[in-house]
Amino acid sequence: MHMNRKLVQAIRRTAYRAFEEMGMLLPADGDGAADTPIRDADALAVSVEFTGAGRGTMALHLQTGLAALFAANMIGQDTPPADQAVEDAARELLNVLCGNALPEIAAGDGQFHLAPPRRIDAGEFERLRRSDRALAACRLELDGGRSEVVLCSSDGNAWLKEEYRDPGADR
Amino acid sequence: MALNVLVVDDSAMMRAVIIKTLRISGLPIGETYQASNGAEGLQILKQHWIDLVMVDLNMPVMGGEQMVDRMRTVPHLARLPVIVVSSESSNARIADLRSKTDGFVHKPFNPETVREMVRDITGVGYAHESETGAGDSPDGVPRF
Image (cartoon, chains in turn purple, green):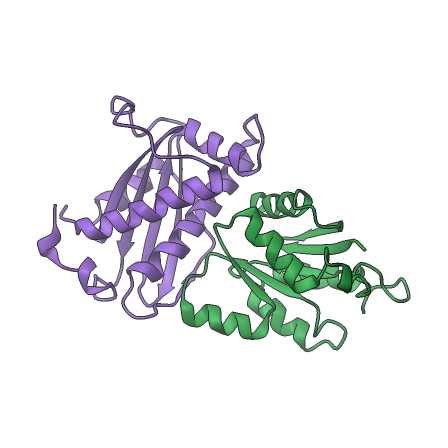
């Protein structure tokens, strides 16, 4: 899968900012979590469909511990909230991430409409990640665990800013 | 003078965050009400005295912009302060929203941003604006 490195970096930056400002989670130092599997059986994945300047899907995968920690931090609790609240927090995180990332990477003053985020299973997340429609996928290393973000487009990459389209920027 | 605040967001977590932010802001917050979409929000406005509405945009059933449009057609609600709290990042859309509401808070937000905006819009916390009557219905009944 060839991806524009600048696009991946732009999404990663936005994601880290959302984790930090909503859940007080900072990027992990170094690569200390490198041996941790990115997906576990109880991990949480959510996706959001968008239309407007471009059409597609953004999906977010969170390791179980990270999802619970994020939700607890979001509301300032010491203990993990109930599962439903953890899922709600993940949906809101993706909503914020997508709402911030899309206008930043879209050409012009791209306007988008986001559908309500929904939970997906690990298989669906993996299908999105491996899909031909995937424009970017990035892994995030955070204090509380790992996360992944995938951006898929149904409209190719013509709606992106030029700098994010250039295949020459592949890694 | 305590402000009664209606928070409209389809995320229960985000509603909790906003209410907590208001509670710890040091501002005089009275009753807080919650709705998960614009239609529920309008119902609450019919039933309770509200001084400030904080509303998300993208919600099922009825979005925030539609809710505000409906409010503006009701005489008693037409001038009720509304702050949009959203991750919307399109400058054109934000400008449009600012023209029909009283403020825009971008998600993710920090508590100071919310506090300052609420203070600026409602005037609470400023001595010279203590006569606004915020939180007190003139006749003790809801606006409808």
